Image (cartoon, rainbow over all chains, first blue to last red; front, top):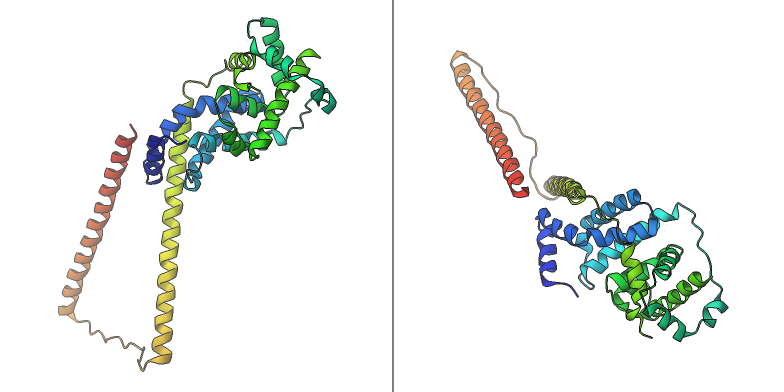
Amino acid sequence: MNHPDELNYIERIRNGETNLFSYFVTRYSNSIYSLIVRIVLTKEDAEELTQDSFLKAFKKLDTFKGDCSFSTWLFRIAYNTAISATRKRKTVFPLVDETMLENVPDDAIETFFDKDEDEMKLQKLEEAITKLNAEEKTLITLFYTEDKSVAELAKVLDLTNDNVKVKLYRVRKKLYILMTE
Amino acid sequence: MNMSSDKAIIKALQSTESSKLPDNFNSQLMTRIYRAAEQKKKRAYILSLSLASGVSLALIAMTIYLLNNYFAVNLHIHLPKFNVNAQSISVYGFSVYIALLILILIGLDHYLRHKWLMKKSGNDRS
């Protein structure tokens, strides 16, 4: 949901108080950067794309209707900006066989990801995350670190709620397979 | 399926978040935002000026067309004839002097207003 202060700030920025946009820059710049750097992988490109995302948000502020939170709207812009940048590069992501995904038992996943003490496991998990595609990285980043709901993720990625749930479920299985390969 | 308790995934994501933005990132970005805001204002000004000019020209054209075709109005204007003699030259000279004085004062007013507005917007930003 939108914070009442944020809606007030947006209205005032639309009326010419540009300096208030610094509130959004301070509040969301690190989160936006964290998402973009996972997708594009280089820090320099991620910094540039973070700036571009905020500039686009500022220029399109009149089109923000308030039907989702400002951060969800901003993440959507950032995701699309990062995706456009990566389209020029042809990155190959490892594909995981459908039958392999289906064969992973749910219980094994639950217990596997519930423990965070094993350093080796965490290192492998970090490596496995880098092998995910942009959409999968965005899903887990926003779901686990930004506490975004399924409905908000659906808005960011332009998917249905059910689709997001299925994709999140499958990403966990994919991570498990990539780690145990 | 309880995905929110995937502690290992959360920890792995958090540990790779170590790279942060440089300290001057926000100020650099705000400079670009201010520049974009100025451009937005300029575009809006040019658009409104073009619209106003367009509408005014259309109205003038329509008025001339209506007066010419539907009303019995003679649009030919006969300018008065000027007889320039020694006495009238001093009157014209005074008129030119007043006109120049007004132009200078309007220019000065515009310059001072502009300077004051720039100073005010600079204070607002800081």
